[in-house]
Image (tube, rainbow, N blue to C red; front, top):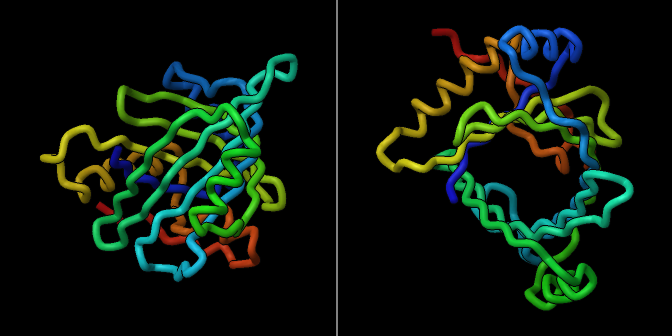
Amino acid sequence: MKKIVLKSQVPDRAKLEKKVANIGMEFSPAVWQSERIYWPSDFRPGTNQPRLILRTEVAQTDQPATYYLYLKRHIEDSGLDFVHMTTVGDYAEAIEIIKQLGYREAADVSRQRQTLQLDGHTTLYLDTVEGIDGTFLKLEVEMADDTVPVDAVRATLFETLALMGLKTFMMQTYAELLAGNVLQPYYLPEK
């Protein structure tokens, strides 16, 4: 599936949650997610290479964890992310398969995530990432219709961020921030 993703650091979480409540919605209870991120052995940033992500998710502490394998490929020219996901039954065996494919572990990202489904294609995630100060809002739109221009969808995401009281967005991944890269916010475009 094709997705467009935008993230923003949230300066005031309570204010954001109040804005969401004022429109009659609320984020789900938090789930814990831990991701091991793998890159091809010859990975170079900006080259559109796919990365593999092995996610552990715990929704309730009295229930077993669920494991997922994601393939994500960001296409720089279009701003689209190609994402494929499947559940995994044997975590250790999945790691061995990933290594045999020539991928190397690049990062570990652990977070508490709350979810809000806006419509059939748009999801908001409220993330608190271990090792990074603050809270982040991630907006994700599944591109079900190839006739809708990417720029139009991105403009709608910018409007959504503005409605939530946010003024900036970011392009970096959580893994990049955990690796020591400085958060680089960009101001939302003005209408």
